[in-house]
Image 1 (cartoon, rainbow, N blue to C red):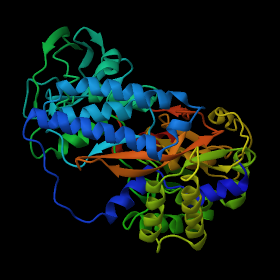
Image 2 (cartoon, helix red, strand yellow):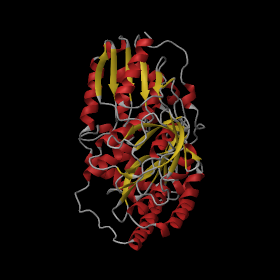
Image 3 (cartoon, helix red, strand yellow):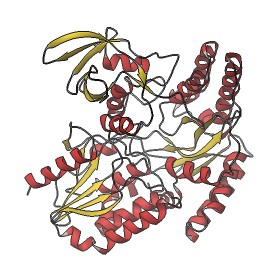
Image 4 (cartoon, rainbow, N blue to C red):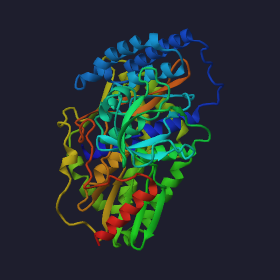
Length: 512
């Protein structure tokens, strides 16, 4: 990637978290859309929104013209046909939603998804929450009011005659998460024991479990989580990949500086906090770099505005160190194919107005340039604008090129803490930070990106669901499709905040 192209991308790259949050914030308050009152009404609605979903991906993304990633164009048609085949089984809102979700999730791209604008049926559970431990699951929390529920520490060996990973392939991954990503495989085990009324994937009914008394088969007693459910959802998050980190700079032990970065998303609430974090890190940067350790905590970070990530990396490491770490990226020949459409042009024009106070002059000029190029592209065939190099390097392999030797640029040991959520602009941040000699990735694998990015929302005709669609596709990605970073020091304990922090601080103490 040329330095000019990388800096432009940093200036205007606004992936999932930012685009969705800013666009939603600008929407006027409108009455909730009317819902059907019978099964036939839900089937009609499912068909209409499904067709609109396919049309939006066809008309506003590069998919129909992307010969380098032909699986997307195939699924655009084949996935729609499979979804249509499900419609006769739709009876209610859950059936409507999971019909759409299976179609969107079938692209296996983190930047294509469907969310409801309302609420799905209340969650149901069998009185316990399970956490992945290899190919099995261990009960991590149970209903405190139900002494007959499986006790914490009980191992769940299989359910309905199948190993849990096999069961997840059938009941979870067609509708949510991605089996190609290790963090999602962990989360899928917990998801098996939470039911949201999906008619195409009824929850397991009988499981073989093992505790100190031996193995036995049990019938699961499904019931609603109940209200309030705060404790349940906190325990459910801990069982999967854990909660978001707390934002800000702290010093939990003498000489140990902890930088919590739960998001890079721009917005009225997040932008001031991110700027304050960058200012705090910059103010104490020299002190931190000469101290015992720096922990860069990205738990819960799903990306946002790459500009925040870039400025924070400089505050932590200094400009010369980041420039040296970015050298491999700067030499790459990279391009992007943007899809020109009236909807995409309107999005950028609206977004620039809404974010005017937050954007620099350079960013505003860049956004106007993007809107103009997309408008011109929309009037030709194929309706694409190539930004960057015409001939690009082969994709993939960047995560394997991390420096394995060489002296750290300063005394402090640096740990990049991941729980598996790091994606999009957070992965761009990792691309710089993990190329600094001496920095170690701890915790879990990061997530991985697909080639499609720069998303915006599209409300479907019913008003009951919203599609997140990408406007561009990368050529010559340094990281290949769904390529992720593997930790240097892996963590396999409970993912609640207290446990993760205790493990990290103990690790730092051992390495003194």
